[in-house]
Length: 114
Length: 138
Ligand SMILES: Nc1ncnc2c1ncn2[C@@H]1O[C@H](COP(=O)(O)OP(=O)(O)OP(=O)(O)O)[C@@H](O)[C@H]1O
Ligand SMILES: [Mg+2]
Image (cartoon, rainbow over all chains, first blue to last red; front, side):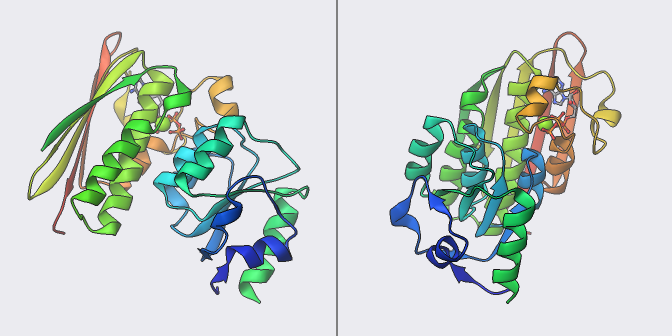
């Protein structure tokens, strides 16, 4: 799996940054797709993008503790307002897609494996 | 050094904030990044368990040259069968808590995998104590 710049991922997958527009120069080393927080705690890795449908504050706590690169919210879901302010503070962008987890994960996998 | 943080039961909006403070301390102490990552997972899970399953609690920490020791004490329902609670997939989390993505029954297994020693003692109807030790130089 190769390393990409987050900004390129955003462009190629047509993601909409909901926060952290100034933080897109970081590297993405992979991705993890799960809606169970303990699963993400246990199995995601630093530098990965997290694909989820969870929109509450605790996703930022998990992403920050795991040093994840960004969070992708699927199906056009809108996060709680506090998620976005926390996102800026922690330096972890929240990105939005209208696609489902299956579709966006498939596309991101192709990008990272290509 | 020693520190302690109060953890409110039921207040998911603050879940993880004590762990995030301690992670900052570990970084300042220049612990190996791999070590910090593991301790972060273990302490977050113990903290969230107090939020999700107990009424109130405290995280007490002690760091010396050899190890990071964290003790989570709570007042809460306690755990009837600790061995069972340690099994991956076992959870008594409410439907509401599950919908937020908690309750996979992976927290205690995560703590075990990410620490050098884990001790859970509990008294039903009173509370639970979780002690986590991570040795710095291994
Ligand atoms: N501090 C605690 N007080 C009372 N019960 C607890 C406590 N910690 C854990 N338990 C019990 O042990 C079970 C398993 O805990 P564990 O952390 O492994 O999973 P979970 O919290 O249910 O889900 P997850 O951690 O995956 O979100 C809990 O469902 C609960 O019944
Ligand atoms: Mg748990």
